Length: 326
Image (cartoon, rainbow, N blue to C red; front, side, top):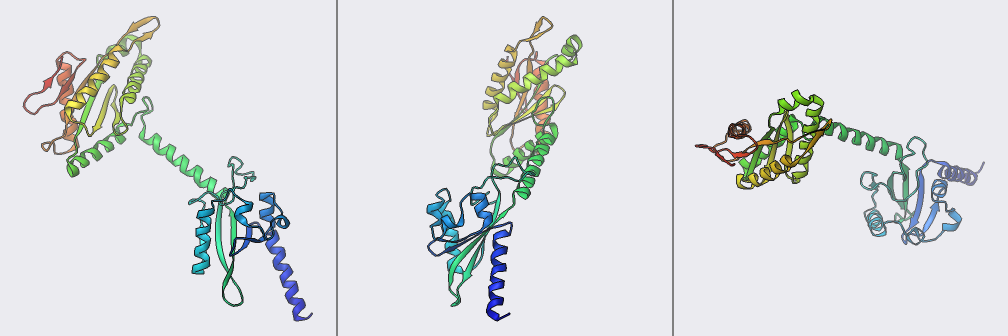
């Protein structure tokens, strides 16, 4: 076999490999005209190479992010270096449908793309190749794992009965707010509240009814929060709320609105109606509070004072004397 015959044979092998390989291969000239469009691209785009030969890529595929992709390509032409596009940066370059059975729920093919400069015999970058890898299985697997981890994280932070933060996560939120005060002197108030005469509810109507009462109060509490606030179930029928950027004067407006909403709630169990009330203690941060435990302790003392003064009221903690309402 002559040298020319060998080269022709090798060329055919190369073309055969390009056409059968399970990756997309596109070759473009400097004007973004299509010089090669392999079988993978034909199968997923539904457009044959003959229909695309010497046609402009961006005119034939107007859905491509032209400005962004041209910028990527220009850097490859100028710097003569490869460039990579990960599915995590951008899920796909070509919007192909996903037909993989394992990841059938994914609507589109996730892609990694390599942009490769192609040199002429003179050493000039005359063309660029795009190599498109179908990474749908990997991408969907990672996304599902991330989603599962987020669900697990949320569950680990959530009280099952109330869907508020559990005590551990709520305490972490409180610690963060305490540290913010120490650094930036930003105001914050802590509210501790619990349901009045809750034992009587359990004794009279049963623990299932007690759980319903806790759930409905937690729901009302959650509806009353701003995005920056953090509420959690502290234990049993007691709740804690961290009000960011809020002094005690504003905090008592919050607690009184909540108290009146809960007082107006009516429960109907087996034909018997009843109402519940809550008592609330408030403590805003100042320099005398040395740590978050002390902050909770002072809010609890205000809550205890609210109980002593007849329940169904809000009380602000004071160092010398507690100021209380109603």
